[in-house]
Length: 329
Ligand code: ACO
Image (cartoon, rainbow, N blue to C red; front, top):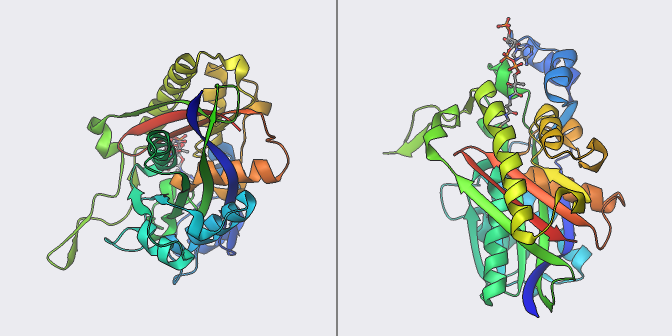
């Protein structure tokens, strides 16, 4: 017998403003930026994304997702003793989005902090929460991925602004004890390599009351693509090995929803059929740290993921960071 952390509830939230590729193309055309539904669908698989209203922050999106996850778990906000928000677009420089969300939720007293690992943020946050639950530092955690990437997009750069969207996803993690055959996180694997800082970043900073450098996202798309498929395969294989499992044990692969071609390449390298891959990038775009819990919640509520299924969650993003979590749902 040992202590595991298991997902007991999932939730997600998308801001109501939905833009199809045609809507976005029409808006960009007014600024002289040319793109098309055909180009975006063919290169990325994205068909639509949601953008938050100007007065809506990361913690607002995360709050709605958290409420839904708590409801699904049958818990109250006051039951929670740990809140981790994975985000690169927090409400302010400090305090953390997690502290702001904790107050809005009415869940005072437990630990609350943000994890910043860009698109790998949710996987990083899940691993941290799992470790805290295993050691007894926490018993009931909310792990949230929430992003307003629309705030850091350069809408004059068609190579990046068509890729991203806003949204949030959340899970409730609770401690449980069993012999390894029950639900819970089985194994994980996290990595980073800071030498790739330049291929995907928002290089600006705040100093002396001013923004120094660009506050907008820049990316070398082809470099990101090559790196992503390699590390996603490695992280999945290492995680399976740690758990004493093989790819045949995976019921569902839930990769970071960056781009359909990255997901297809990863599945092919892992020899997993595409019908075992949860895909929501077509409807949400790339929501960075929110993408995995959003996809998870959609698949749970859509009835595809069922109790007892084995899930592989995989993230990759700026840093560069990457990682995977294998769990029994
Ligand atoms: N609409 C129309 N044309 C476009 C657009 C657009 N939105 N963007 C670029 N183009 C044009 C370019 O100008 C170029 O034209 P040219 O040949 O006349 O110069 C042409 O399309 C090809 O451009 P490339 O950048 O070479 O296009 P590529 O095939 O590499 O696709 C893409 C770009 C989709 C970004 C690809 O590199 C990719 O998928 N990279 C992965 C990056 C990614 O998913 N990042 C997400 C964030 S990172 C993460 O989450 C892990």
